Amino acid sequence: MTGHGEADAAVDGAVEDLTDLYREYGDDRLPPGQRETDRFPVLSKTGTPSVAPEEFAFEVWGAVDEALAYSLSEFRDLPAVTQNQDFHCVTGWSKFDCAFTGVEFGEIADRAGVHEDVEHVLFHALDGYTTNLPLDECTREGVLFAYGYDGDDLPADHGGPIRVVTPHKYAYKGAKWVSGVEFRTEKELGYWEKRGYSDTANPWHEERYS
Image (cartoon, rainbow, N blue to C red; front, top):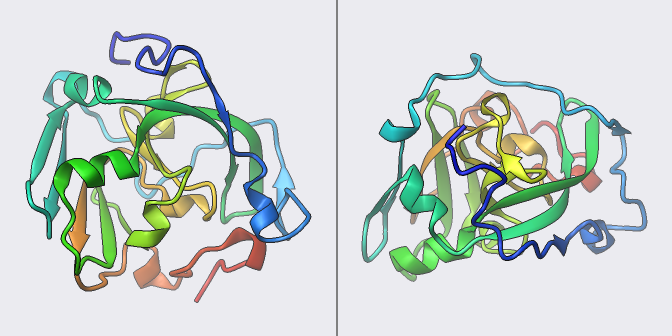
């Protein structure tokens, strides 16, 4: 926990509903092969890393005009939104109506000044995890650096202090405990992508493995 409580950088309690995102891909909110759950299972590569909030830093680098670095407090002071999203895990479960609060990917990209030849993004996490996405998949609505969940701070076992959420992709594209984002002109596959998971990860097309 950070001491902010109730994700207080959210925009005056306003919640944007993105749960109809599935209509871009078909008529079913629940992707094929998924089961809906009210639980929020905890999955990770090696377990929850320990991080002192006062020592946490979020960094931005690569093909940008200005490399950025924020303390957790500074990051939480950036313009923020709260969005109601669905969450789809590649292992076969989906949780509907997750209220995530955080900073939109586009806000960070704009502040860094992304170069015109950037096509790819690599997310880095405190536990050594990485995952990649094309830039145009990151700048679409719904991709957040989230630090709040359901009106409170994002729990550590779900990726706090900050995680990426990607409601149009399987959740392994949303790095937990994210410590930075690298803007790249060439693709680099992430941890699971190098191990046979789908690079595109569209739940409605069941793109689980390559």
